[in-house]
Image (cartoon, rainbow, N blue to C red; front, side, top):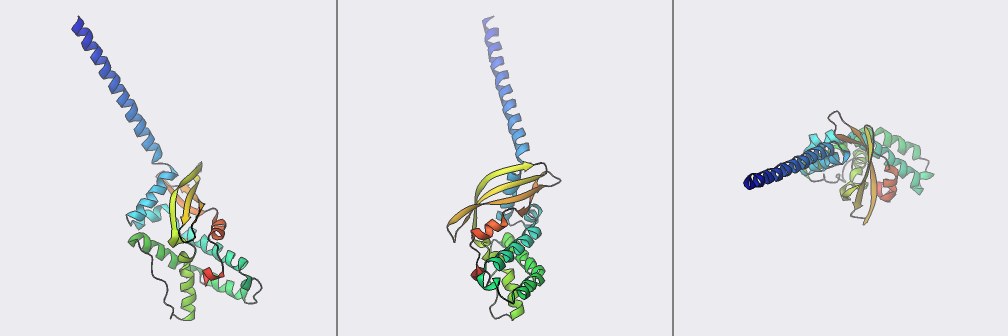
Length: 220
C-alpha cells in the first residue's frame, strides 16, 4: 500500500514536470512565432544580410531605390536652401536643373555602391579627380553616400517600434563616428506577404540632414 502511494506520488511529480515542460515549450514556440513576424526581427534580418553579404535578402527587406531617391531629393533641397552662395546665385536654377537631370544616373550609382558594400563589406573608392567635368558632376552626386554619413554610421539599437496594421515606424539609435553624436533615425516599414517587413523610407530625412550638418563643403 505504502509502495503504491510512493509510486503514485512519483507519477504525479512526473506529470507535473511534463505539464510544466509542455507549457514552457508552447510559450517559447508562440513567442518565436510572434517574434518572426515583427519589424524588429526584419531589422535583424537586414543586419544579418549585411553580415552574410546577401544582397538578394538585403534588397528584399530594404527598398533601396525609394530610399535613395528620397535621400537624393532631400539632400539637394537642404543644400540649395542652406548654402549662402546658392541662395541668391543667378545660376541656381541651372544648377537645380542639372541635379534633376543627373538624378537617375546618380541614384543608380549610389545603389550600386550600397549593393557593393553589402556584397563585399567594403565601400567603393572615391571618383577619379581627372574625370571630365560632366562625368565629375555625376560622380560627385554618386558619392553622396559617403558625404551624407552612410560610411560613418553605427547602428546601436532599436529605440522603439510603432505598428499600425501593415505599416510600422521603427526608431533606430544611430551614431556618427566622425561627428561623435547620435540620433534616432525613424524607418518607415511595410509588411510583406510572408509576414516579414521591408524598410520603405526614412520619415525624418530632413532632420538627419541637419544632424550631419550638411553644408556646401559636403556636396562639393
